[in-house]
Image 1 (tube, one colour):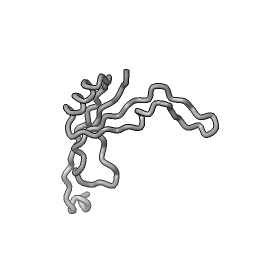
Image 2 (spheres, helix red, strand yellow):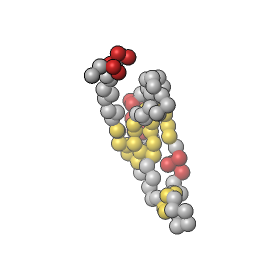
Image 3 (spheres, one colour):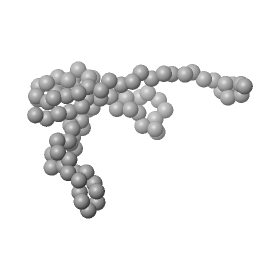
Image 4 (cartoon, helix red, strand yellow):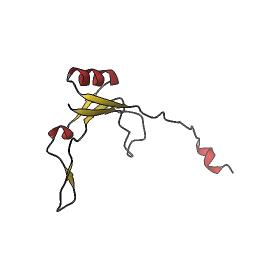
Length: 93
């Protein structure tokens, strides 16, 4: 049976805003990774590991996984702590 993880991806370092982070990703786990003796890279004959399916909500991702009989693990996003600062805070203390 296929195994996957469902998570909400982090924003990249190049993003300062909160746009485009409203998606959930279903990513398949590697069944039997093989280490390449020449280069040392990890590879697999399982082509599902190359898939990353994007969904607009967590419920849609879970529904897809259940419908296609995929064992899944949900990784909840961490809550972001927002600290509001002003320009004047740079000169205090």
